[in-house]
Image (tube, rainbow, N blue to C red; front, side, top):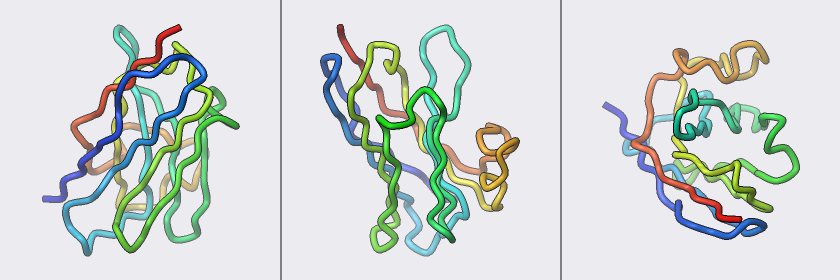
Length: 129
C-alpha cells in the first residue's frame, strides 16, 4: 500500500510563501498524475494543481494560477507545491494525491477526487490578513 506523506504546512501572513512537499513511501511507485487538493472548513475539497508526470505537463486551478507552482523531483519521488503571494482565502488543509492512470491530462477529469488512488493525511496552511 503506497503512502503519501505531506510536509511544509504552517502559518503565514498574507503575501507570504510556503512550500509543501509530498513523498511517496514506495520508491518504485511512479504514478501518472500527482496533485494537490485543498479543503477549507465548511467547503468541499477542490483541486489546486496537478502534474502529468510522464510529460511534465502542469495544470492549475484558476484561483492559484500565477501564484502557485507544482514541480517534481523524480530522484526523490517527491512532488512540491510552491505557494507565493498567499491570501487568507488560501487557508485550508492541503492534501497530496496520486493517480495511476493518465486521467489528469484531460481537463474534465483533472480534479475529479474519485479518480485518485492514494491520498496523504493532509497538512494545514493558515494565512492571516
